[in-house]
Amino acid sequence: MTPQQNSSSSSRPPRPRSPHFPPHNAPRVWFITTGTSPTAIALARQALDHGDYVVAGVLPTEFEKREGQSEDFRSLLEDVKKTERWRERLRVVGLDGRIVGQCQAAIAEAVEAFGRIDVLLGSTSEAVVGTVEELSQTSRTISVIQDTFETNFFANVNIIKAALPVMRQRKNGHVIMLTGITGHLGTPGLGMYCSSQWAIEGYCDSLAYEIAPFNIKMSIVQANMEVNVLTNRITSVPPLPEYSQAENPAPLAREIFSGLLDKLDRVNNPSAFSEDKSPTNSTSTRSPDTAMHEPSTGDLLSSDTVTSLYPLLPPIVRSSLIAETVHALTAIGGHDNPPARHIVGFEGVTSVKEKLKTISEELEDFIEVSNAVDIAREEDQHSTSMVTDQTQSGV
Image (cartoon, rainbow, N blue to C red; front, side):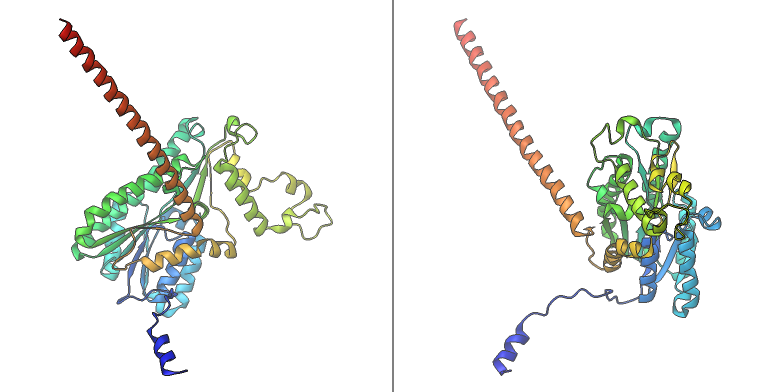
């Protein structure tokens, strides 16, 4: 290579590279509100491996009774015990975000353990499947609406309020709220879930301006709809026949997620869905009658009672589903200049762009209509003025 060629190549700016895990001057202290979710567990593993500290909140009743997703979290605890450099970097705290006292106690325990909280990740979420009318059938379904906002809105608000004094005193901190593109886009059959997402995003957008003078950053991370729905608890209310696919052409969330859950069933237990249901099929785990009549997980979303479930995600499906979201969280968490809003995934960005384009077109139409009204009003006023002048001159 000639000196000129060498000089030319060295003058080119280096190609930007995305590091596996962004560097930081000092280990960060993470507080994760729902430590048992697949996203939180994957994030905790990455943070611990990077040398960060993690405080994971778990719902005491579920953890003690081994309900929900507590078994996956217990696997994390076993790995922490086996990994010497992780042992002193993880603290588990009991946390039901709906109870203010538990939020305050959990924050105090985190500060006592590690001295501070650098990143607060609000990830408490629950999807509610049902149309607006279906959620208004009985007192039980109506109470589901209140439960949704207690979980998706107030639980996150309570933990933020508990953490702010600690961050404000240190004049440093970063609050990340994990929501979804449902915070931008309404979805048929997820009306109440979308409402709670819009509510917490509006709260965080307003909060960002209030806490900025204290050097506390605020970021909203919007994952794909499937990430939040399939990695947390799903509650479904009884369907109305008027909203069945045969009667209603709207692409309701019930049918969409029923299909996804059925696919997960096939991945988890492929032999149960084989075409050969005869008793001689030794690979089948169900008898012919059971295989034909036992409801699938997706069918539970059409139950005639209020039903709650956690989707059973095979490891390969879970890791691929949440990988991009986990990378986004670890990439921006605790940075000096994080984005105020980050949409995860190309599809999500495209969907939001289409929504904003539609809103822009609607605003243009509104302006045209408004101008037409203003012009008509001015012409009417001008005509009235002429009539008045002519009347006065005639008198």
